[in-house]
Length: 271
Ligand SMILES: N[C@@H](CCC[C@H](N)C(=O)O)C(=O)O
Image (cartoon, rainbow, N blue to C red):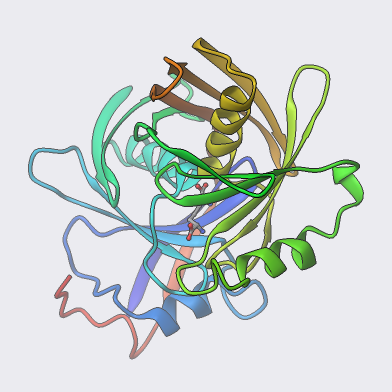
């Protein structure tokens, strides 16, 4: 079976996307998705997404991590699938779509390569020692770090992700260093089990955790620099709750092609 795919990246967080509006693909196949996301033996990607039809919404985002398992919300993936939906002509410059954590509103630039994605509200940030722990659609651990450029994010991130507290459900580990006018963030991602070049829910978690730690109430706009580019997070904070949270940044089509998968992507969709 031949499946047409599109490769997108958002600040270096990269994804394989497939148009499954005709529901012809049964994507519940962890081994296949993991093999397609493999950077040596597959297309390569931090995750894979399927764009599907959903009543009451412009489309539904179905997200899998690079390990082939379905996961919680992916912020950069959400921005990329909005650009993909625009490319397919499914949406105009604004959209309401459904993801695993609920409905999302997003806006895309006329050029189709910059997406502002509304994230779920956040009402709870807890502490784990010096770190902040919060869920921005996916679970995140945020820890301040010095000389982040030289940190061993893979080893230190992995050690936290697999400690007794987090090893069962997993968590994404974000190290953050405050710079002059932005935060520099590096993330070890659950489900990729490696450092990625960007993490959208992670950038969002950093912006909110830093605002809480500085008691920055009112409207906030936080610049985040990651290995793969720049993101921005806007939000409103009343001292207890964060709402009107927007993750903003680039989302670009890199290439498209065909995957030939003789036996694995069956046409009997039951998703
Ligand atoms: N890259 C993502 C986060 C994807 C989900 C994460 N790997 C998890 O399992 O929690 C983003 O941009 O938010």
